[in-house]
Length: 126
Image 1 (cartoon, rainbow, N blue to C red):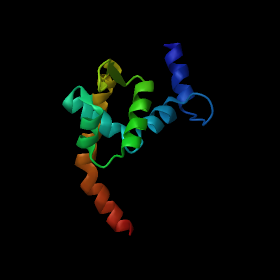
Image 2: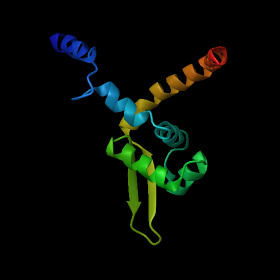
Image 3: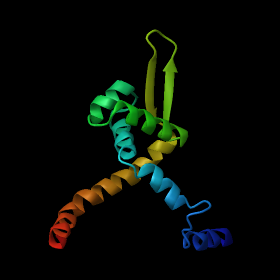
Image 4: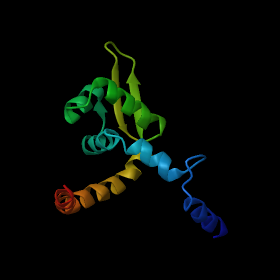
């Protein structure tokens, strides 16, 4: 219990130096493509690079490569390479990636529910 209270106190500071889980995780997942890749893999299961690229559509091959590598280094996506010619590479969510999906879905639901209000507020500001 004491450790939990200490962790909460630490989280109230949000210093840019050191280990701030909120800054770290949101900066990695809050980019333009990570959530789309995670949602795509969740919806479709195991996918090849070209299939992910076709599904998302407007992501460049370079950006998809960078995004997949980042998600893989964070342990959210795994890459399986098959020793064949031509090489075959497949991507899927890890158990950690799957554990994130309910939170992503909740955020998507919130966005869908509140987007009209947000757009109305933006119009009022301009």
